[in-house]
Length: 90
Image (cartoon, rainbow, N blue to C red; front, side):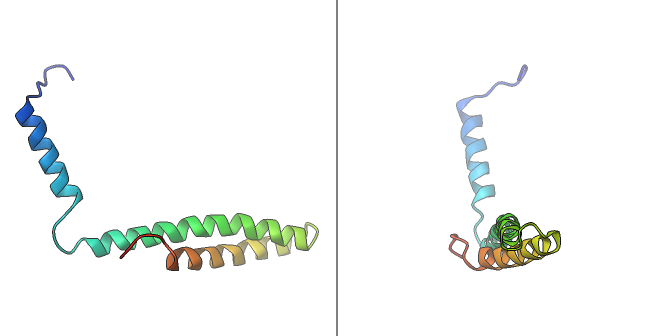
């Protein structure tokens, strides 16, 4: 960072600007909530894919068709559970 001098006033201005950007006043909470719901659903889908694949393979002794069916059902279930049970207040 050669050539850039930071004075206490500059640092305070940067912090105030960052606070105003990250904590907006008004109607942005719903958009943030939607992102968090989407992310929780995506994480649930990935976890459900692995869990459903493992359960499907174990139940059918390695039959690939039922392993994929189990993975698909696990992804669907994990996504729905993640969408509806995210820990963020909205």
